[in-house]
Length: 118
Image (cartoon, rainbow, N blue to C red; front, top):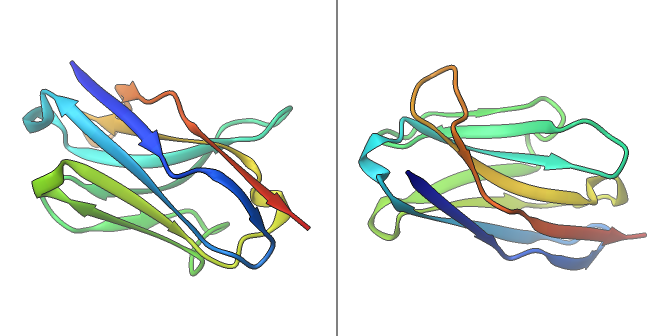
């Protein structure tokens, strides 16, 4: 089992920045990749990006490429999502997920709310 806990959400004005954190615990050695998702009310879940846990390769959805950056600190078992130039349409519940293989997302956290005011 892998446990994931997000933090860092909150209220920010449009154009501002936030950095979300996702702390992992449990069977971390089994993780292949970690990713970030978001879901706004009435909308489908949206994949934002991912990072290979034992490497450094990242992948981003086109919708956030250039504004959002994923990084990690293996020593702290933590993945980050740096979000810049935030827009009201970025308002959503953001959560991280862990995948044990390249095509699966096996665990997810409870999420942290991000609200961007205009």
